[in-house]
Length: 101
Image 1 (cartoon, one colour):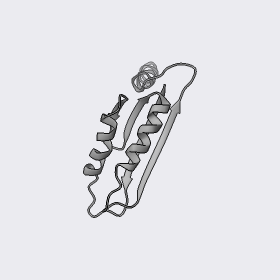
Image 2 (tube, one colour):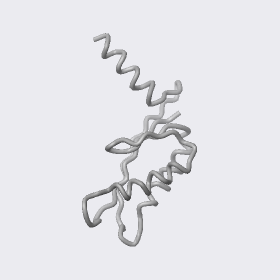
Image 3 (cartoon, helix red, strand yellow):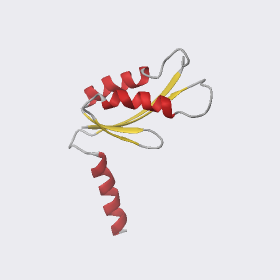
Image 4 (cartoon, one colour):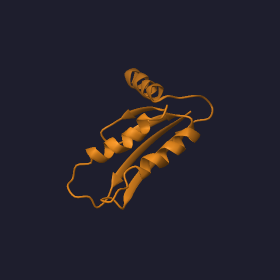
């Protein structure tokens, strides 16, 4: 199972709000069967990496329009092969160590 963080930002738009564009990107993800969490700085996706790759491309493409001709997409991938790890498990592991410290 892979955990991926993605941030898709249109460049050269008028105004400084991105929420309309983020909603377009998120609507693509909602159509998939992947688990995700929207955060203030990006979106965290977990699941099969092959499926995630396909959705990432669609998410990137979804922002282009007549008003948007350049998009910056940042992707981080945590691809652990020795066991399945969920975002919740990763957080729980850190919090357990924090409480012991």
